Amino acid sequence: MKAKTRLLWMKLHAYLACFFLPITLVYIVTGTLYMFDIKGKVADEFEYAVSLPAGWPAAEAQALPIVNAFLLNKPHAALPEDYYFEHGNHDWYGYKQEVILIKPDSGNAAKLVVKEHDLLLQLLIIHKGFAGQFFKWFSILFAASLSFSIISGVVITLQLPQLKTPALYSILAGAITIVIGFVL
Image 1: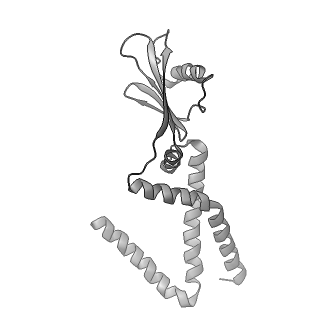
Image 2: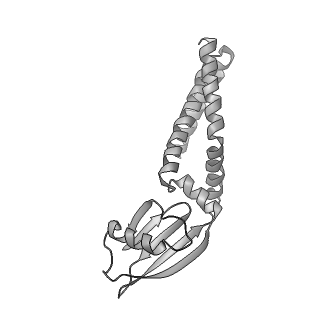
């Protein structure tokens, strides 16, 4: 590999590593804490009674305007992007908060629950991929950058004669470790 080409790989490797360092630290810290069952918590929870004169909304398209209109004058963040229909309830989930429209057992008064997350839970939700489109795309770019950084590091290392043999042994050791992990 020519010196100019190697220098270009090294610059790309370094700049991408520097740019993605903050999100890398978020993933490392939250992943490690999660392994020790430290997940953060709901900082505040609010419950409201919501009148449903037209009855229970069967689909998100019907529930969304009701919830948005109700929350318009409340001191909460915007409704999260991710939507789930679980246990007959409408659930919008994001890193800042979760908003649940709970189906009433009888009558036309549903319960609307807003759960605001603390910082640790927000970071964990980003880690788990439930933080909206921005963080999903940023995480995809991070994964591509991480792949490039590892591959470029290997390519640069394999070009150096004094490091080629130990690098190949390291690759082999890593592959064997993964196989052993799957077998066990």
